Image 1 (cartoon, rainbow, N blue to C red):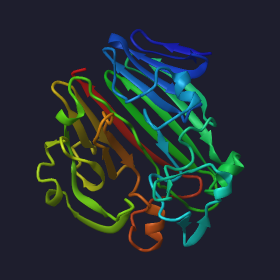
Image 2: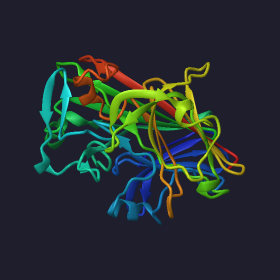
Image 3: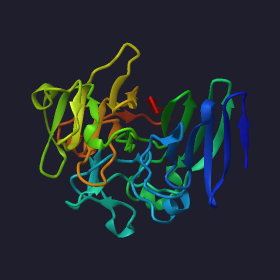
Length: 338
């Protein structure tokens, strides 16, 4: 195992209940825990003893035995849903192989959330700290795995760096195209957040977006948009009581530092997600009902079903990374009042 220490920050690779983890430690007992072999998921962001991530397990061993969506899962090589068991890139249709059994489907039978949710293929490549922060970088070499390449035949690597500074956690993702052709990028994260000082129905959210992608009955975009103000007249301070959110937002409202900030607040606590470079789309998921005490602000490189909508001429914004180049996306989570 390895460790790196500064005067106030430290980072260490260890084992929790027999599962490989990396812990980032900050002043005042702030802790971030990452499980590289369970999808490289950051499942803890603890401030004053309270976990900002929703993690409905008693231990990381329990999570490893029967993983479910929680913490901060990466959605790749496609984010959210595809509307058929195929994806398009550069005018070519690539059919998914259902027999391999390495992707999930939603209640409508659509492929969902990519291939890497709980992948054990991640390797820790750097663990470090300095007087201002602590970090860990893990890498997944996608092109080394035939079952992954069979579904998305673009050789690439993904490096994810978690950096803890104060009560902020930055997530930086770098995707290098190792192939000989341009590679489309449709990735994102699906972080599950929670507050502790009030129930979900007493939370309110700030939605930093000017438009909304209209969805069909299967929750995939139609290609049309509408103004946020037409649907959410109190977008600056939307109470969650009585609201069910599973929406795709565009035209994000950018602050002077080039970030768009979505936030949720309770009685005193507040959590903010700053969408930085690479993430022009925000999915917000806030189910209602018993046991649904969480909210998701999801940074996305493009809208749901981006590959297939681009093929139909309905989403020209689909990003591509050229051979040998790297796509980068960054977002930051900040908690206050915990």
